[in-house]
Amino acid sequence: VARPRLLRVGGRELRLRRACGDVADCTFSERVSPSQPLGASDYLELCRHFRTVFVRRVPRLALAQRTQARRFITFVDTLYDAKVATPLSAEVPLSLLFASEPDGSMDRELMDDLGIAEASAASLSVFGGQEETFAFARTTSRLTEMHTHAYWSAGTRVRK
Image 1 (cartoon, one colour):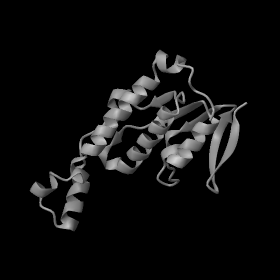
Image 2: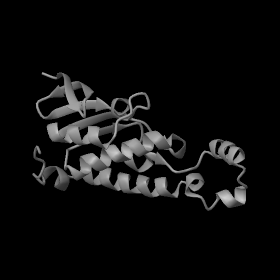
Image 3: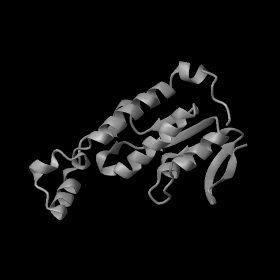
């Protein structure tokens, strides 16, 4: 029977609304919410306790949501490295999960505040989103691999 579970991470509490044995069931917002910032140590603790982590209601992410996107990337990287099975439900297919078009309005405001000309800003990764675009592609590749028969049948997912 699935029920709430509490994990301790460095003196803090990590709450899971639904868990049963070595299976956790969570939503995107529960693990990647701006209101409850979680990081790699929290995700590592999840991996120590669970062989399977369901992640539901993953939205399409854009460069304008850098913080959430980076947390999600860290979450996926941690699950991937620990060989945790990760069934995922998303608003869009994996190939469309990350929208790489920049949000010009936020960039324009920051450029104005910093007094940076548009020509100069083009070479700065904070405005171009090159790092995020690369990380998005890597995460999409990892998620795709994590949903293959080979990944699921590897048999290397063990508690640590």
